[in-house]
Amino acid sequence: MAAGDGTMNNDAIGVFDSGIGGLTAVKALRALMPNENIIYFGDTARIPYGSRSRETVLKYAKEDVAFLRKHPIKMIIAACGTVSTIIGTKPFVTDMPFTGVLLPSVQAACGATRNGRIGVIGTPATIRSGSYAKAIKTINPHAFVVGNACPLFVHLVENGYTDRDNPVTRMVAEEYLTPIKQEGVDTLILGCTHYPVIRDLIADIMGPDVTLISSGEEAAKYANLCLLEHDLLTDRETPGTCTFYVSDSVALFEENAKHFLKEGVDGKVLLASLDDTPA
Image (cartoon, rainbow, N blue to C red; front, side):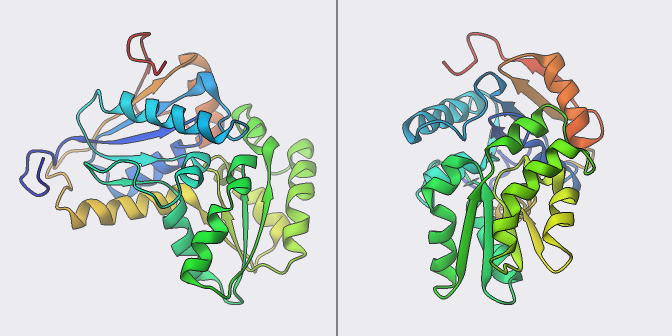
């Protein structure tokens, strides 16, 4: 459907992630574009994606997109660092605006760094892909990039271990972040959308001179500009609605989201039916 003809403007923005991490992008979308409708799919039955093979992650991502397409949507956001880095810069959806979190985060980091030394933390699959380093060097060939996988962060966040003073989370964070800090980075990309939930703890360890880049927030900013460019921003003058679908327990999603966002989800949470759930 042609952009700017008004027929798609009031359709929803589709967002997907393996769990609740993508809610950081939803929160940012709500702040930037409060009148937009949002449909979110959290594939909570198959979390985490970060420990899966490339082929499995791509399969899951295609199924997640197919689920969102069952609803009237005008843009898709892959609010999952693992999916974003595996698909890289290649087109994944071509018939409507699409973004992952990779390019928006990289652009923000390259604009923020002062000494050209950029750190990246993410899931094992994200770090293994090397996509962040490749994308950064496309913009700044002289940049120094260091990455470290943080496999336990997703589990800690999903299970509510998000307090900055939690001794378990702090111990894990210090082990993951100390090697990157020792490399003298002044910018750190939080390459998984779960990580901003423990942003305060990460900031404590990295220190005040390191700029933290939230991949979910940057994707939301990019989406806003993208919809504006395509003349697809809603003309609705009332607040939009959020509808959340999950592939596992609704109650657990709602409980975890309270820990995650420090507030309840703003919208209906529904269990995707067997007919609608990605196979």
